[in-house]
Length: 314
Image (cartoon, rainbow, N blue to C red; front, side, top):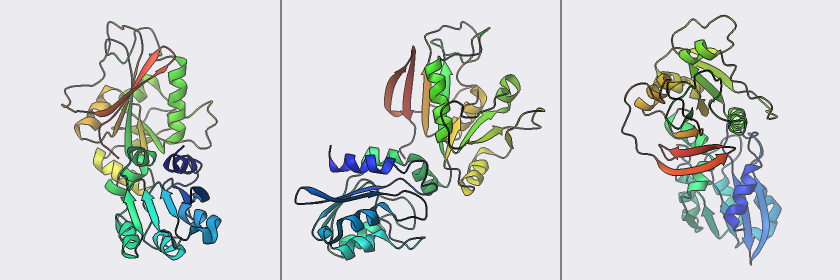
């Protein structure tokens, strides 16, 4: 395992507890030995770099630090990590990705270089994607939007006479995705047709996402969703201001097409089931695009194939 991989693993220990802050892991090596390591555990608590420096003590002087995200350069709830690194005598810092927060965004790197610290910036895709929601929220002032679609082999999003398209394994993954998201949304067509609860069930969720319905009201009786009737861009900016960093779209063809037309989708998850529907609505309502996606990956969940693709790099 490389030092960067170890730092990624450490950073993951903070998932679910650092919000609204990013995940960060740090490892300090001297003479081929790890002398300190740490991760950001919770908002308001010490940052990963400071935890690693405290663990290494005097052995930090002349050592190398590998950190998944650029050390901060501003005073927030804690002092700047870049200053702590300089004061500890770290000789070299390897940064997984720059911090897009306008309060740092290169300033941490500049601060360390000005003090004589050698800094290498990797711009590693895993480092960026580990905090993809936070990075989009910090850089663009809106949530990171993931569009989830379940479709048949002939591109239909409904099967006559059947409630489900995808299999049990895929549906369980969707509940995991809900549990990991700040908000989940559908359109009013889905609300009226399916009356969805949008809760994360049977996955040990420590919290439930905000559950939204985009479109014109009123909501039908008994539907416990928040109605969102603003223009999409305005709605996303408002949600971002309420600390919603990640939004999972589970709506139908109309909502999916609306978000794609306004270039507000960052990642697509397409579950393809080995079924031919023969009839029914398609994936998108009306023309969209062309949209070229990248970093396409496939995985298997039961008999379904999940295609993951990015529209925007975080």
